[in-house]
Length: 93
Image 1 (tube, helix red, strand yellow):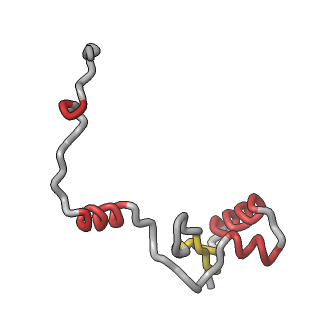
Image 2 (spheres, one colour):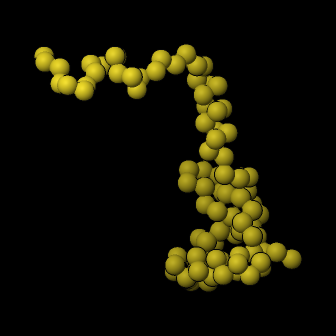
């Protein structure tokens, strides 16, 4: 097999760096860098709650919540548990 100019064969690539890290340490590091906020299970409401209770489309619910956030009447307090973590909002009193 002939080498192409500018290419490195497999393990000789400068982009491959051997890592000797315990996977649990790596998991903790990734969790700390992708953390977006607290996980809220029962408090507040989500866009899906608003859509279901008021019969709104997603676009309308997003617009309403965005306007209320700008007005200072609603604030983002965290995320629902699970993959994708839906944003949770709370009415400011």
